[in-house]
Length: 221
Ligand code: C5P
Image (cartoon, rainbow, N blue to C red; front, side, top):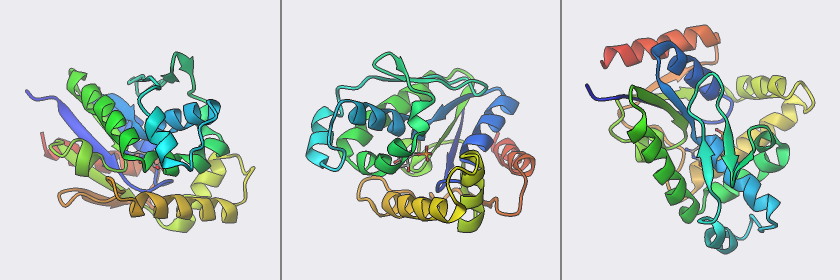
């Protein structure tokens, strides 16, 4: 049997990470958070004093950082050059800089290499979440899901994740800006694959979304 590959894409705050981890755990699959990889290389650039708004500087250094992603859905860890960055990649500084870094083709080609290698080496299969997994990274995935939710719901969820330290309005503004950048970039923008199934999570609980996605995957087996 071919390994099962589940591609889960969508904008920020639609529940991709929670859903992907739960689906992987339920189906006994590995898990890869590709957003964490773009965040890790962004953290490395900031930490090394690279001007993230200078695409040439980002392109020149993209090959230097070594990103290693754990694939355990119950405890996904990520390191860059041997430093565990699982927590620091969630900072507002990284979040604000990541779209500029991820738009640089040299960064993307390197991350896509990591992502295809992870999928190829997952014995039972893998759930891969991101923005361009179904369109570009793994176009032959077994199942492709595109998660959406209203802007207000996404902002409220993200604000809760940040323990209310940032207002819902500011969160919504930041999310909208990041999605516009991710959808508008030239290389491999955020987009739904023609053969993906869209799941609007606005009115669903996490359990309902997970059940829906598991059912969609099982249909394809
Ligand atoms: O999923 P998360 O919000 O952590 O992703 C952070 C950023 O990484 C996105 O806003 C986007 O700029 C970038 N990204 C990407 N392609 C992916 C996954 C994430 O460009 N497959």
